[in-house]
Image (tube, rainbow, N blue to C red):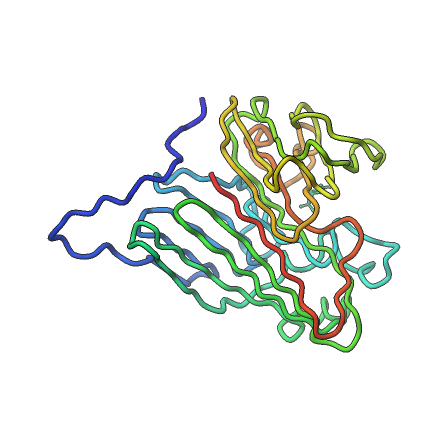
Length: 316
Ligand SMILES: O=P(O)(O)OC[C@H]1O[C@@H](O)[C@H](O)[C@@H](O)[C@@H]1O
């Protein structure tokens, strides 16, 4: 059954009582946590600036996080929203990124927390919070700098509203030579039963099928997951700019992209999940689907002084 308790309601206010509390916020133990007055919450690890939890006001988790995910900075987090930058997968033939590990270094680097800002337009019932994180060539570990010696700065913002979670990135080339990169928000969405999932919004796209010799194929109709799935929809196109995930016919997530042309759809299924030491429980693939917004086919080339901006907004 789809849990239908996921739609926001107006915050109850009682005349005569003190004003509703503001955003409840903590920055400790290498993580940042924010809870809205309406009850929605988000948790971000400084390691990778990885969003590891997004809950609705009833405490229902919206993201999938492996029970064996490493949250101590020893390995990229298996679940939540790891950030892929500056390479998607590996690119042995692309000299500037050829030395980097799978999915680059952003998800393995410690980010700086830059601060928070909250806003409300119609009172506490629509308070939102934006949390900003920074990574730059100045703060990168030396080992990484030697693998990717560019001068850059990134601001990554996580915005929680009662209705949505947005992640947005601004990448600036602060150096004197062009920078080529790929970027991806590797979002693990939590579902109840993968066999009941349909993904729409990709109907007009071609995709690279990574589990079938990287053949280019055309999508027809909705995407259903019936086995290992690893597809790069590029450019991702559909009737609207939204990718919708429906379970038993009811939309449970909508992902809207801004300046992120590609969408990766990934589910490891039985064997791949069995082979990942940090994927638990092993049948957890039935409870997740990755819908990853990014720019990963080809390279974004950023001239000195230029900045790239991209974002996704996930609504439930
Ligand atoms: O195991 P990792 O490095 O987190 O990658 C997980 C998956 O990430 C997806 O984005 C890729 O398309 C897959 O090919 C890959 O297996």
